[in-house]
Length: 105
Image (cartoon, rainbow, N blue to C red; front, side):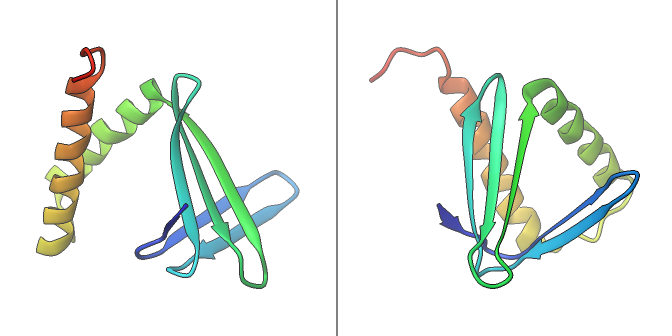
């Protein structure tokens, strides 16, 4: 698992319960391919311990990314450094997608 570089916040609102938690840079995360999508796991090992797990199918992840792009176009408070980091990560994703189905080198 890798260290969380910044912070993640999670909130789940059920009809009779509300759960909220945050994961700082002392937490760890893991992303892996899983059943037609990706699995995300974030673990906080210090007290109070907590674990968050989520599965996103590729179609939903695609919708999220398209909507995020539209939101950015409408105005965003993304810093230059964050923008550069995001472009680098998305370029890596695009390269990895281009490799899918290619014969191993």
